[in-house]
Length: 308
Picture 1 (cartoon, rainbow, N blue to C red):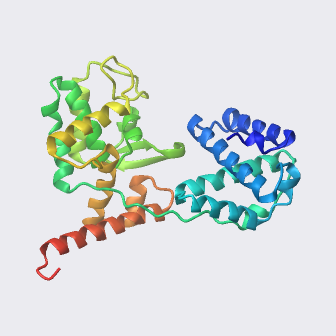
Picture 2: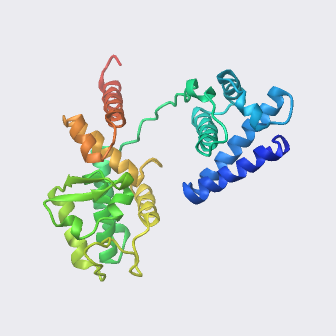
């Protein structure tokens, strides 16, 4: 049901302008934009029933924190998960932020409403043997030598250097010039990651076989027609490897990055050093791997201990 049925003409116009602002200026992805508009529409629909009339700027001006909490409670009662509730609150805050920036309306109601806590799901890591097998089996699935070498090098970067797939695919010759790899991560932040000999060897093998020679600042990994390599092709390669090795669906390129962190920690790696290697802005993001390692130890204990 459209929010326009419950908002007066003035508020509907502001919602339309907010939507344009999100798309054109803040450049939100179309799916996120669609979700935000849907969330705000549901909030306006709730307010209409909650206050007993058409929703206007005056309605929003008079809002209390209790009204917003009532909306979140109603959505939770409809079995909405914590992530979706957090996104709904984010959409509402975004709209109120827009109104305040434009000098249309200021409200204190949102200041005391906390974002719903989200359960942290543990990243799925492969065992050391599984991770190594994904790299060494690549040759058996590809007849074209340079393509096999390319995929092995990308997968090696994900596991052997802990790179995100996008970071691995963005590596250029210039990034490889120093003893440590220069990686451009989220938000354009640059970090240096040491390359162990097998990973550097995998890259050198690929560079020696590839028919394409992009410029020093262009990504080295190319598709069969010479364009930048699509992450989808590496995801499909991992899908083939899952079938060949009997790995679970959770064995994705990103799982190799998780495996890198978990295996380092399991060998006594320092948490702050792992944070630097992964490019995490916050240590709390890296700390989740301590839970992964503890869970792995407990599984080994339960499997091996006679009284478990």
